[in-house]
Image (cartoon, rainbow, N blue to C red; front, side, top):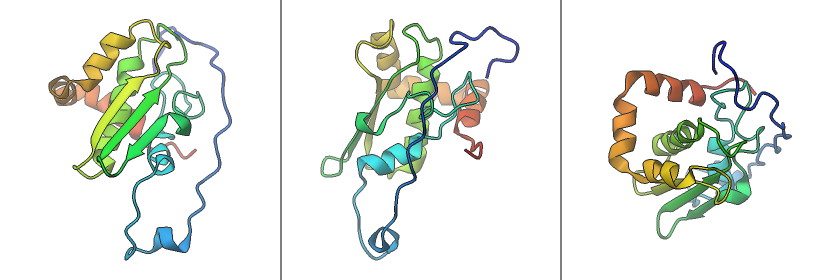
Length: 159
């Protein structure tokens, strides 16, 4: 969150959080191999904190389950996120936070693609290019200050 700085979107729309996923006995049985699904990935990212507001990405409608796609056979996960405003300067940080959360949570076999929902950001091509570049992502995570901000976004807030 910006301490004392002027917020780009001072009054964002706030959306209701979706209900918790109902777990079945099969979901909890460690002996049953169950594939990752869209909801499981959404559950991993929905509570990421927005860097500007004391709200989750789900509450700001930045992430939605319908914009998550998992293909277990091809080991791919794709997440589209929608910044709250078209000129959001936090878009790269939000995308990086989503990517880091998934990199830390999923098996190494998955290729993770995080990108801006087409047509929702003025600099979507530049942001998407940064998020798709492994070397840029790795370099960003070597920056102690940036990593601290990402970790704050990923810390639990008790929603």
